[in-house]
Image (cartoon, rainbow, N blue to C red; front, side):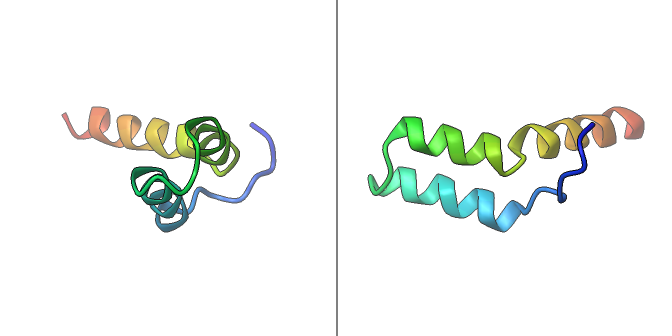
Length: 53
C-alpha cells in the first residue's frame, strides 16, 4: 500500500453530507471519497469485524 495518511471518518462524512444536501455532484463526491480513503476505511472495518467473529 502507498504511504497515505489514515482515512479521516469525519472528513468522509462531511463529503457525504455535502452530497446529500445537493451541494456536490455525485461524480465529485465519489472522487472525494476515493481520494480521502473510503476504501481503506471500509476494508479496515471488514477486517476488524471478521476478526471479531
